[in-house]
Image 1 (cartoon, rainbow, N blue to C red):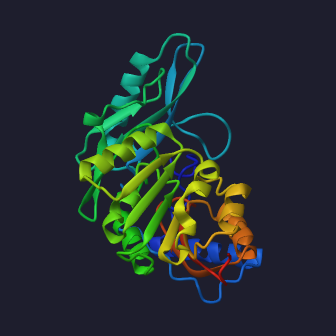
Image 2 (spheres, rainbow, N blue to C red; image 1 turned 90 degrees about the vertical axis):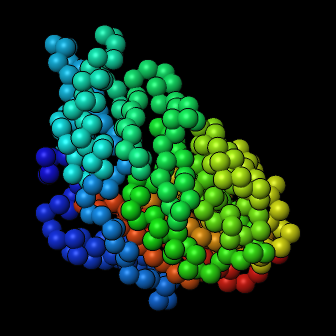
Length: 338
């Protein structure tokens, strides 16, 4: 399957070489963009697991006119389906479930359907859920939510919400964020694009107040469940688009004691959000977690022109054997903007 599937690109080289190539790619991208890094780059953080790390897979399911059905991944080239019965980078519970997933999807596929996009996920307890055929097929009840423990804190998520795919590297990520020295008992933490509340929940005990912004209603539902489960009283969850909600937050109260973390989708930050972060706010500290280097570099170009400076850049290998890399950036104001 390797070489045909469009997912993995680095199964044929030692892991140390893969890490070196990814770090060189990121450094080259920053250098070619003209961004000033001034020694901000740190070595890439490896994944504790090179294989069997993904808690989620997205599968293509195709039925042709003859009635024959195929399930697999998008190919590296072309439009057909690369059929698979196992995936080496998926967690064992998910990989072992794939033959059963194919049978269940074939039984559930309506006659009029020709294709479907299937999502299959697991958690720490090994339960496997899937959906993608029919309306609300990804909806889960709270009692069925999947979960993982991070830093001793249980975080719940569902089929219809985004969640980090590699559990094994998350403790290194949360340790690195704490190591930035941006949290303190008197700090206000703005968790922007907060999803199910991963960072807001994990860091709630490190700060005075948490404001989480998320527009996805399914993620909001999980975030509220996480807050209730942990009985967190210093966390406010706000539903809406960043562009609509952020300007109403109390950033102006004391920006020197505030820190914002943005964890946007692959498309990165919109121009209006960059404008807000560059605008007349007293916010002095910004942490950017990116899953897409190209949009990260684009956004950093806008932010640095608006008065921010990259103090630390830490790559993380969230996706071993693939070309993808996650990047954590600490930004500070070059000078106060009032």
